[in-house]
Amino acid sequence: MIAFCFIQMPKSMPTAIDPQRRRLLTAGLALGLSGCAARAPFDPFLDLPSLPVAEVFTCGVASGAPQEDAVVLWTQLSRAAVQAAGFEAAEIPVGWELAQDAQFARALRSGIALARAADDYSVHLRVDGLAAHQRYWYRFRSLGAVSATGQTCTTPALWAAVASLKLVVVSGEQNPATWRVITENPPDLLLQLGSGMDADGARDLADYRARYAKRLADADLQAARAACAWLTVVGDAEIARGYAGPFDRHGSDKTRFLQRRAAAYQALFEHLPWAAAQRPQGAQMRLHQRLHWGRLLALHLLDGRQYRDRPDCPALAETSADFACAPVVARAREPGLLGRAQEDWLLQGVSQRAAQWNLIAQIQALLPGAGGGDGWDAFGAQRQRLLQQLLRAQVTDSLWVCQSLGGFAAAPLRLQSQARAQAMEWRAPQAQADEAAPSGGFFELTFTPQSLLVDAIQVLPGGARQVLAREHIRAPGLQRLPLHGALPV
Image: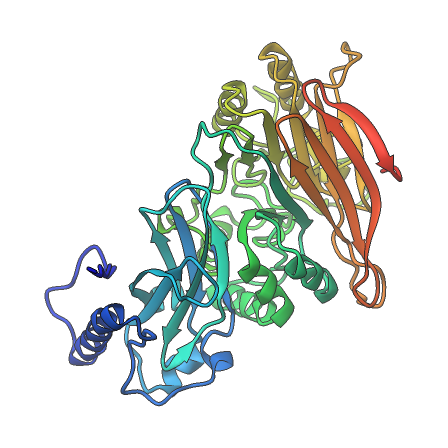
């Protein structure tokens, strides 16, 4: 039997390495090689005193950006643990291992990643060369501690026929009971509408980092993030509430706000399981993404803030609105929420009809009157154009999911001239602040080539799972068949 060991090293090594970093890398490589041959637990820091896991991996583990042959594994070392171990290095080696079972008896890959101080000691490890549509388990080790075990998957091949997909859609933050329910019965993928972090009041990178660290310290959230691969649609709460492009709702200096946006994007990248290629470039960051689940589903994640024009200010007695807006003047063109380039990207992806279902995820509700003054109602021309293009391309199985300002809701989307719905929209609520009250809940979507089963699930005090409503959607044509309860429009 021949054993192969894969050691992942940085793409480029500096010509001069400080003695401390050289000792760490040498120890890590030696152990990675010997551990592979002997199938022993990996540990890049055998010579260091062990630190408690809760002090090292204070934000847990996560995975995301799945593809048919790759997935991104994420973790973060706490700065306090790095300092407690006596290191102030710019890069700290972190051992990682990927296996085909939860006990790591069938270890598949292992190696060394680098946690960089510039990225708040976060690790964004893309593991390539994996089999399509497979489940994997992973873990990290550093500073003498082993992380929790995470579970993840790759997607089916692009043109593969797929029997089913279970996708959970959760809106923003949820209370611990909801995360526990999701962890007990994890889906294939989890889609989060808004990261759940409230940046209100944050001004610099240290502020944003502190807010993420506090939120991700929750043990129930960590367990849910470790249970499956996560995808995230980013809204305004993570950056600055009500912002539009380079403008915040307070009318601040654009240069100053873009500096704040750059800090927010950097902290966002550091704390989500995104590939290194998604790293922000100053105040610019690629947030709109597309994922294919074989021929079954094409999932389009939209960015409704970075390219948004300021809408006309509403007629208010106050001097400012609670979102960025512009005085009512004649415009050369109608304002847009997505920006023209992202709109073209979306329409091109949907019109390809590469999958049976198209699921479009965003923060703002598309349905007229459902999004408040900061929603799509201020961008009617672009909304009309989107629906017209869907009709022209004969895209009949288009689904939209977004956040809700109230409770669960669902509604057909159609042009005024059309009697039949062109798309369906589901709106997911955020959690209530009081854990004793029912949680905001989540949607559980089960896709098959012929139909879609939609469950609106609320978590009751004590953790009981209650199906408020269930709908069966047939393809093609979005034929709705309520099976239990009913969702308001």
